[in-house]
Image (tube, rainbow, N blue to C red; front, side, top):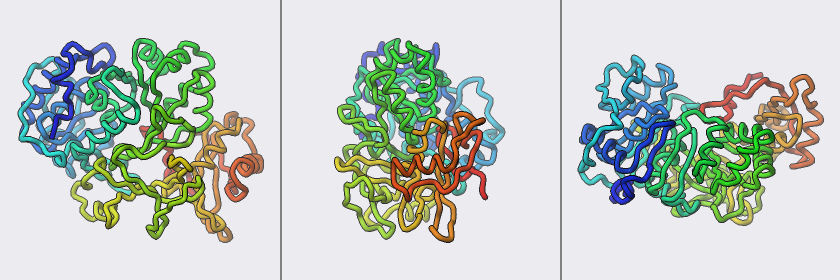
Length: 482
């Protein structure tokens, strides 16, 4: 298989490749440092990487991939139990870390190699890795049990990044900035390996701040990647920060992912900057499936059309394909293509049940498709599909409607058993003004006017904040049970 990073040898050696705060590497320096790592891990199967938001993580992962091995990124915030499970399951032969990093006791038994970003070495000659060979083992969030290790082959990385280059007109002239963690595919694959495959550069913010975004976009960065929590903070800051508005207005591409970006944040950003945030849709197991194209219409609520090489269909509960492009018929998203993972490590039964007989991956995400083929996700099958009064209702569209109400700061929607309706719709609200929250009837009427009467919440429950994970996704299973 051709190199994942042709720019390591083809790009001008003095071109900037990576910058983390004040520390940076050119392509020549990255090739040398990653080559030194690769020479030390050549012949290994799986290599753990202590994935802090630092240069060492990027150099370590690139070095592992140059050597033809598989990297297992570890979340530095993982608890002892989760970390022990991941290490037992993936059985890495060693761990890469930045010099001076204090590793938890769970890693005591592993050989440690400190990544020296100033080291010099030639790229290792790997044993001609095939496109199906493992590149990364990334562990899922584990909301329904211990995290599962999704084995991502080299072809998945290459095809996803090349498909995004096509959709976003992504070139070596682009400079990406973001503050995403490097133990997820969003921050690591898209946010670090993506620029390096194109021959461009990445400027990592370390910790996300709106001032950091302003400085980088006004200082030459052309693209911003973020999650909804980040864009919400941007939207909140824009009215009093003209420099931030100027920075966003000058960016070539603003991309949000990992969860749906609420409509009111879309609108506030567009009103202040004249720019639309585009959304894309992917998963750990599939990398990227769809995206709004750079030359397409960035409509709030849509994650665009399938990327080149990705087959996507919606199906009924019995597996019957849905052909309607009416923006109303809800079905589960299933995908097939070279972007998919190959297996859940050590979980053959889970792997088998994740795929249909004809090779489509069951995503568990529910969506509708508009007349132009664009996909609009309405929620997860397990937590966001509500069956009420004979209707199949996606929680996501109700959440967006609630967020249009000026009295609502945050919203989540779930279903709970109801003797008459089967399930009734429950709205969990963080009010804009806790001293004067909107009433249940007011919110129900608000939703009914925008969507349909059968989609109105039957009960409203107030919270001080919604439970969220590291990527800003609402954890509905953590909402109080009644």
